[in-house]
Length: 136
Image 1 (cartoon, rainbow, N blue to C red):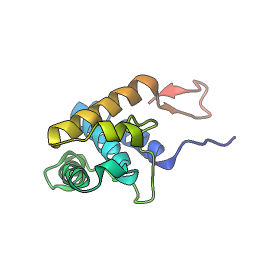
Image 2 (cartoon, rainbow, N blue to C red; image 1 turned 60 degrees about the horizontal axis):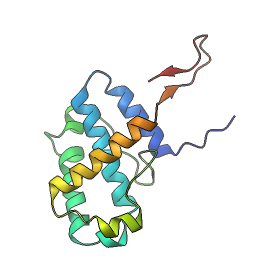
Image 3 (spheres, helix red, strand yellow; image 1 turned 180 degrees about the vertical axis):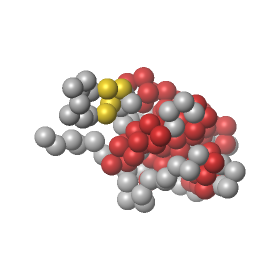
């Protein structure tokens, strides 16, 4: 049997599993995953200032010594990974209408992505265990 889940999404699921019981870390993973997808599939309307904002927020969440990824010893997505979340609200047409002007706007969009993904996506552990599929 073959699974077509992108490696970026699988890595996000693993990170969420590693953060079980740590809501701050889970929120950081979901926000970073949304920003990762935005940076690696950047709509043309977001070139320039918006891209720089994405980079700055990602640096704080993922790479800063006092950021959640470093505090919880979480690994970052490989540079070639795409689709960190199973869905993304920001297509190129929608990006023309929505241009973030500051950090708060980008964080709000990332939270919308995370809410959409977690309401429509349930990661499971697939095993040969007698219990079968289990929620992560």
